[in-house]
Length: 261
Image (cartoon, rainbow, N blue to C red):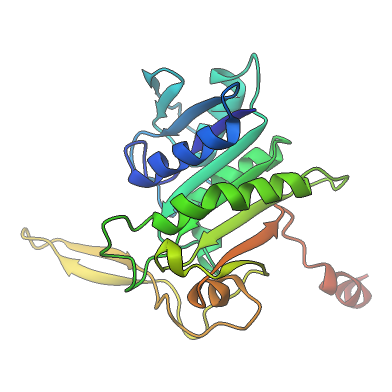
């Protein structure tokens, strides 16, 4: 198996090293793992692409490249340039430092990379490691994803990722904020939303007196509905959420067309 890996934390991020280990085991001795990752951190860029300016790409080692762009850019570079003669069989994005459950999924560059792969018709999975009191200061905060990642991905590959839908399936996988030994298992769940919390800004003055705004996230332990990704994570489970890039609200189609047409 030929696997392309990327992330949004940057090519030197520890989570990318973890993902490389997972990918190497999945690919097997006869497979190949290629890396095309952002030269600098790209957290929060979602499915952004560098449409109005070019990006520089540099080879950092054997099958290892850094691109001055977003995770979606990196997937495009990997599929259309670096691996154009033999495209990847699978794209993995992550392992993100912090969760991409609930509303975080909409901002995530990690998911943006996986989504771009799905639009290219390539099976893809996004992996993220939830941080919390039980693992944030641990020697290896990625232990849950490092230990359990291969088994989860193998099961998903065995289940199959190809279907006849126009928008390709991809998976959002979040590992809980606990040590590996405390992971209870995996659950297939829908995307949730943290009630009463949202992104915002916090103003600060620089030493020169200029005013700047920092983006701040909400409480990552805020209540969420049962049967959703964040709820499963906070209960110690790996969450697996099947996704597509189709943003249509199908439940609203007939109701709305009856009022407008």
